[in-house]
Image 1 (cartoon, helix red, strand yellow):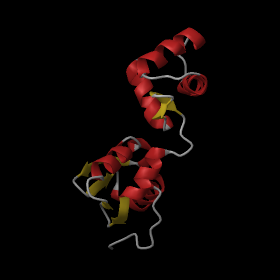
Image 2 (cartoon, helix red, strand yellow):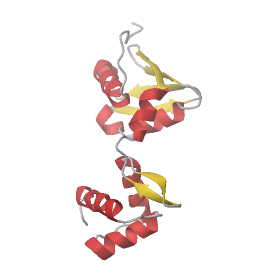
Image 3 (spheres, helix red, strand yellow):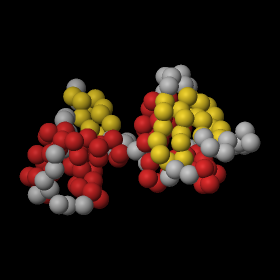
Length: 155
């Protein structure tokens, strides 16, 4: 199995050189041009994590490499506040975007040292793996979400 970095480099090259309309076409081109065997679910994850977007190019929708990390920008603009106490981190978001922010956090669960999240309409509760490391977890969450906070604690 090829490592994800090589696969992603090949995806970037293919998108720069071809008008690729769908994930199946990308799977086929990866095999044809690079002998990289993969599947649609892996491609879907790569596209999401690489910030690849679909744009209308010459009357057809095709993948394009984004100069801006769209997911990071949406996340940054979604977060209104992040606060913590001795056991929990609470994130307030723009209405309707808590699930998006919670999902972004959940994909980095191991790196952030969290057990998980619960998201509502405009609030995300983040449970740290340990209350002893709440400050570190809080700082990691703020960094991931691109949030600069002046008042980080209710304690």
